[in-house]
Image (tube, rainbow, N blue to C red; front, side, top):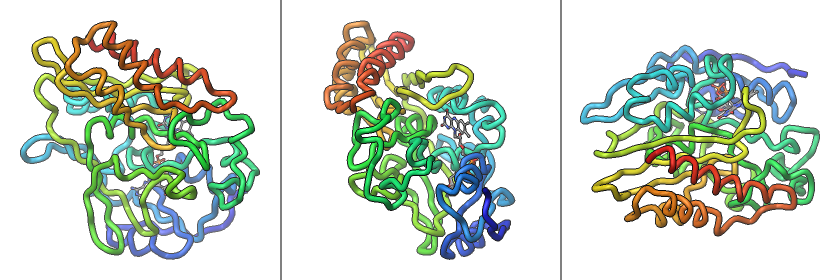
Length: 323
Ligand SMILES: Cc1cc2nc3c(=O)[nH]c(=O)nc-3n(C[C@H](O)[C@H](O)[C@H](O)COP(=O)(O)OP(=O)(O)OC[C@H]3O[C@@H](n4cnc5c(N)ncnc54)[C@H](O)[C@@H]3O)c2cc1C
């Protein structure tokens, strides 16, 4: 049941920050995640603050000096279909196109996609789990086939976003405006592991509004791609996926970013896979070495050891496709 709340449509970021800083307020972007959470009483809202009327949060624009600015209220469809994104950052266009269904991508925004709450069925169900302030992670010894194999404990969620790993692989930065002012930080430092704070997936404080995502110009000779494996072809969250950004020079990998999706509570950067790639030729042997390196630190739960093989397979297939 959807409980009563008051509704505020902010006309500016300043107004949104001040309304969202009030106790129990929640920010509403496209609503595809928030409204489901409120309806299912995962959490409640005293006030819902819509940011959909704030013009400066919308659209994709070129940055002076190169790169793109993507407003937080830009829809996933706009990101997936943008020529500027797909030509310079294929990994991001592919990730946005792989998220959810066409209807959800038309309504859901990139800001909402990186801020969405986890999909763990205990968190979303009638369980007072750790993430809801309880004292038990029911996934630890329960039905944990869709849970994490990296970075878990005390809670074993996976981060549900497809665009977040792509953006982290692109070294994106994110701008947040809150009661204390505006800051721009690397997106990689936005996400929070359960060991640091089991109640939150990111560093946002009440009243903080994500306003934009900033991408630098792509490096010369860069190639990128996003690939995810999911149970249901039509639309589904990643069981495992990988965002890869490489530069090639003289047939060798000059630099590499490998960020995994669907396997950790945050977009999971695999420094081991990156190390296995840099300096090598982009061939089957290097891809196999990267796949093996990526899963070295994996700690599967009772029912999700299949994800270890899946990560290797996704990496090997993606790297083969990039050759
Ligand atoms: C059936 C289904 C399948 C899905 N499959 C996938 C999938 O395969 N891959 C994937 O990546 N996603 C998937 N999603 C998630 C979907 O992409 C997200 O719901 C959507 O991107 C969220 O965007 P929104 O604008 O609707 O956010 P909202 O629902 O409005 O907000 C989501 C959360 O983010 C916060 N928030 C939103 N914008 C801001 C902001 N600018 N600043 C601060 N906080 C903010 C809200 O307060 C809320 O907590 C799926 C969703 C559904 C319902």
